[in-house]
Figure 1 (cartoon, one colour):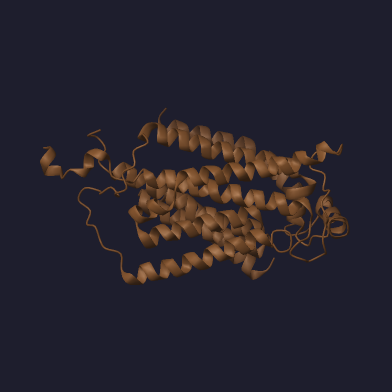
Figure 2 (figure 1 turned 90 degrees about the vertical axis):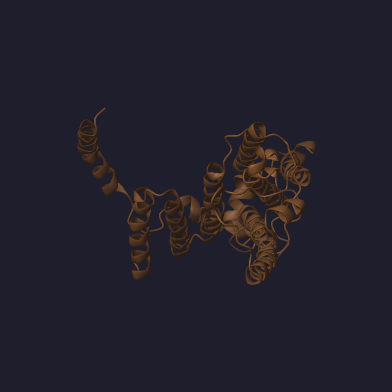
Length: 81
Length: 258
């Protein structure tokens, strides 16, 4: 196993639990984004550029945005409706 | 159930599972060793049979195109479901002002942010189009290109803000584009039936190996997936970002309501 692969595997192993263990939703969001970016890099190193491209966009742009919107929607005061 | 009892149950379950997990892990192939016979077969057969250099596209859009049709419909249904769910609870109002979170300051976008996002949006959009067009030649393809185009639209939101973005991105157009993508895929799959061939048969001219126009029907299905994914994801972004708009009742200042 190459050093780069090993390093990325380790980083992913650290980033995964950090998503679960961070309790503040906004911090969790950034942890999730970092996790997505690391996964994309790992897929690229493991010679799966197709998967890496999908993961890069879906994991670091679309999914965090959906969560960010959900948090904003909660923070917006909608009780008057 | 108390946390202590729960942890005990978890430990018990882990202890029970551990030997089996170990047994399976030992039987796994060595890390990084290519053992899949299917991959080797596709690599050997793809170029002579279909004239394409991206074997993933060959599998997705030709050899196993029926599976992709299923995934395509799944995405279509998921987006439709999200739209129905969100629009159903929100209503079809057309307020184009962004909502304000009570107690949070509203900062104006800097010129640098607007300029950077506009430039990045253009480049990302171009890259997405490139990815869709070169689906049969280089890694990537319809799905990847589609989501990249959707992320370019998201950059546009960062540049322009909710109101102007909402005026640019219209949901009827997205509806048409997404449906067109799915219909194109179904049509490309069903057309061979008319001449008595099996569904999804590749009857179009295959073109030259490593050429932009190679792969026959793959070009059509790849483009269809790109269209449907780009429009579907933008639709999803639109519906979610609509959740952050101001409600009609918010248009009056808070003081006037109380």
